[in-house]
Image 1 (spheres, one colour):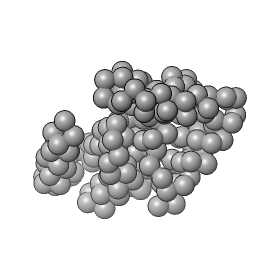
Image 2: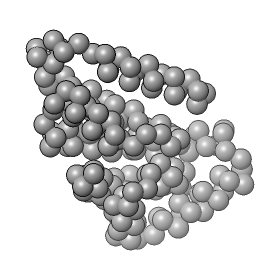
Image 3: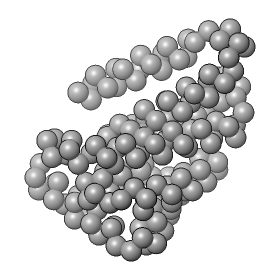
Image 4: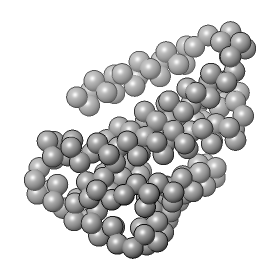
Length: 165
């Protein structure tokens, strides 16, 4: 299954890289939509893959896009992808992950589900560090933590860390 997903990502990346430049001249806003879609896809995959900021940098450099619009659109796509990941990961983990590991991850996720400000502070600090956020959203999703406790801090931290990169 991982091989098929990686193959699809490779094909999509190749097609995007070979995209004709006349489309850029006629429809420059189309590339921002592609930044959103690519960031969404990269961050909705349940295993650790390329970071979304590399996708944003690729589009910005390849098609000479406005870096601030790329950053805003890419972070929004990334946040939506992580939201989707946290919603479907409990169903996927029940089928794929061993029961013992599933219980361990749920335990970690429930430790995160304390007060609202504590989890937001943890998510903010976590996303400011150069660590993948896939494990964080996997644990949060498996513990069924409300997205309203995680996503706002993720948006701020992701925007800040991607801006620095």
